[in-house]
Image 1 (tube, rainbow, N blue to C red):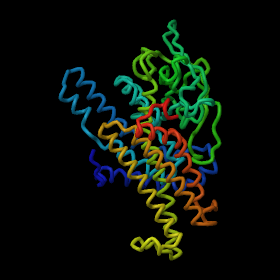
Image 2: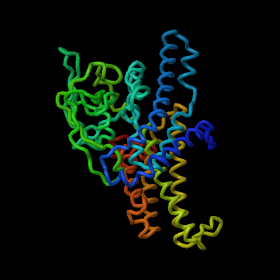
Image 3: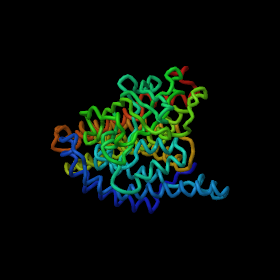
Image 4: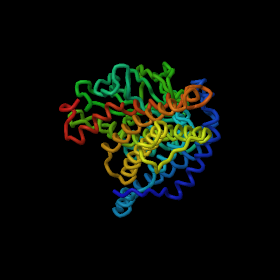
Length: 426
């Protein structure tokens, strides 16, 4: 694996546009949307939709070419489109970092397929990808979401109680249960073209092996938003609880093969993990944006106060403030490098579960510390709601919690490095 630290020109150009959106439709509204938690950032979604829908259309075109190549038996074309490295995830990394610099909560209101799209791409058939993701490439802004966490099943996914039962008489799946902390769940179910990927069990006795992802589209009877969360940070984000009461979905809305093989290992659970392998590096990217916002603000205030950071000076000659600030920069850079590594692996088609968890752990912990240190160094200016430093501290912590807590991801890293199984190291 080779990492080129030069940002490709096409990504730099796209980043300029995204940076303008972050500066004009996000940062100026950070405090207002933090104070009015359930208001929606319409200016931001309208600005981002043309960019995101264009990216989705490019992905769909690639899938269409792969399907056409398979139908024609063109091995050369099929191989090329499957293995050629791209900068898709690298572009997403920089976009997410910049948007989170603008505002982490507003960023999470992106009108795109989001985690739901990751699940479709990780588990769905090519035909399902085309059918389900096309809505995010045309028409009006649409949202996707993924629903996995439950009141009694957080990190322990084997405890999921939401059930999916196949009704042969109607050729439908019937879902029952409740999901909580579903990001963009309200947006996905409120809009006509939205969708939520719901992880449910078809066989509780099979544990993780019985898990399957189901596509619940907006307007599905029996799928209801029952609560909008009041949160500590990322308050602009749409975070809801969803109840499923005999929610019926078409038979082909189960991702992957419609056949359920509960006797063949943990295929369903591996699908969920494949989703996280792609999403965790992007969560880390979001953390980087918050961290950069805090570091830049501290440096700005230091400059105004005449506090210099003598990078070439011996460590023992630095003041405590200077050492702390340099450590903030070092922690941010370390998280960036681990995130970049996991992202490059995604673009090269290399399996990255270890690296994805390492990036997620480091970014979550580092940016939590960096933003807390920013508030500390700024004193009352940091703690005051007049500035955004205290908000960045509140926003940062979620990166150490969602997409697998820091503790769970640390366990994943340890198991893979030491060669232990889940039963041997829990």
